[in-house]
Length: 405
Image 1 (cartoon, rainbow, N blue to C red):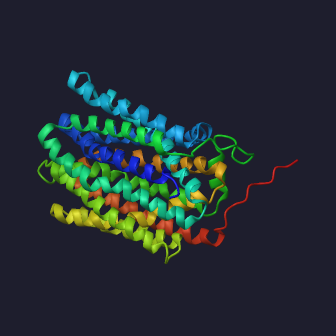
Image 2: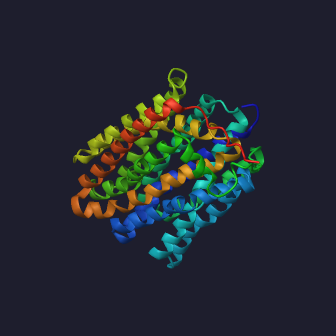
Image 3: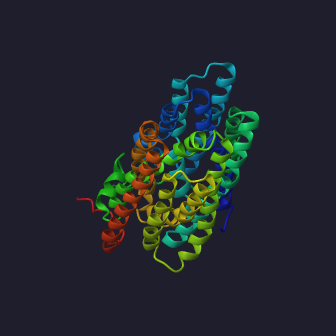
């Protein structure tokens, strides 16, 4: 941390994540309270993540051309008014479900390029040491999860007091704060000169197809994130249907995840000094999945909170090592494109995971919803462990292919 770049990125992440954490509760609750439909809520939240699947891969070319810093600034400058547009339209009586779907879809278009830009700057600050970058990713995880401890709880209180719309205005303001911080303090993130290997929209996909470690692991992300994304729909639905339509409980459950994730972010930085990153991720991924089976049963909400705390505790043990590999293993000219290709894989499963919650609830209630989530994550965890074990034997980074003369 020889300059202000890393602290500034962490500050921007923490503040914008606070607004997003409140919206994480407010947006689905807004749809549920105005429509009473779990299916409509699923559609809105699926529209938010669908652009990652559709545009995640080409967005890597945008990051490479504009540079990471410029991409971050443009993303937040667009997202701030888009978020604020939802309450403005609601208050004026012009907000319809199709229009809300369009707005959240446009918001989702900037998720992959922003995240890829943010993480690709880290090796510029810390160098290409995988463990150092993994630890920095753990810090980013802590910065993102710290607001989850307070954001959803505050959201639950404010929803009951003010309604959902004002919270979305706050979220828009946090994006503008992030713009100021990045503009003032973040250095680096300039465009990276393309070489023969990094040219083309599909350069990141080609790299993953050749890499015997990251390639198979990326395929498991489709299953894992498909199941995990259902949680963002399932928790508000659980509070709305099983726990007496109480928005406080939705906030507290998300807060429980944040508490576990913060503890895990501290833990992973210690464990990375003792264990290989890949082994740590393999343990964390199965350990994060198993507690969610508890929620299948009609248990009291504090038991759900405990299960989610345990899940959150192990999530940083997955994310930090994997981010360390993704951001240091590919050559510098390819990192943004590899990152967005992995995010596209994540996004391809995410909309399905969110969309199926509504229909599953109609068929089998909350038990069916959480069986799908816990079962999908467990299956994805097992596939990840197999892919990691096979790829570990070939964990030497790929060299760029020699261009023929």
